[in-house]
Length: 315
Image 1 (spheres, rainbow, N blue to C red):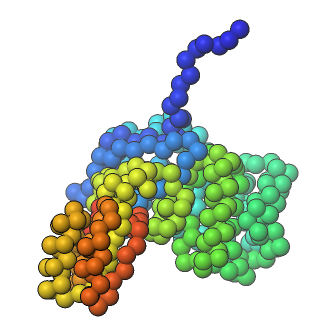
Image 2: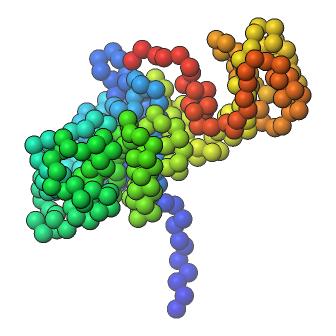
Image 3: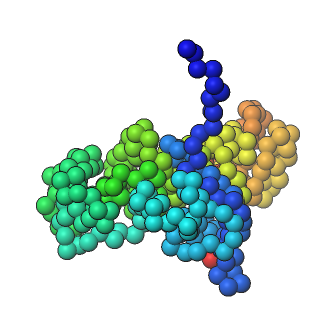
């Protein structure tokens, strides 16, 4: 008999915040934000320093108590079901907190003991992860003998020991060389293909663009935009960006030409940025006399700067 019952097309929501807020005395660190993270996606969580990202993550992890709103992880409310939720979450911190007195292998086994994994299962899991992150030949080395890239890979392996369903990544490739970054990116893509849900914070916009299915941008405690990154760049920034170094008279000319081409402009300390949504031969002709210029595709960094500004804020 054919099953004609309706199929729910909605993806499973792993994390959901509604009006989530946190205040420290008179200072509002998070000002009533709303977002959700679907099962199996990588969710990029962006913002300048002091935007409220870290506070939001700390609320998800139960490290700080929310001041208002609702927060659910795996359909369970925080802080009501915090203990159960923590068993299903893995965290890769920005700052290295590996135990330097232990070997690579011992770090993994010790972490597994916090989740009460049986010894045989922990040993098998540790070997699998050391192989996955190309660290098996370093299993008996103490932490101080590892390079920065190897330590970041070990932090990832450690976070995965208890097979979490949600992996929170705080600047996972900070300070690494290009080869190490690319290796970690590939491993994270493999994990996503295996169904691991990820929440990624990073100041490397190329990293976020490579890994994230959707992004959220915070600034001064509020959500200023969220959505699919390529579509957001197209909608909010445009197609191409002209970066031009020029003098004041040339800027005035370029602003006039840009207006005729329906392009947006932004003055800088030594020139102008021009954001286009279509090709404009007149504009390219107009920039050629300038001392320095280049044309490139609009990217996520342009979006980030447009949403949060070029000026540093006090935290």
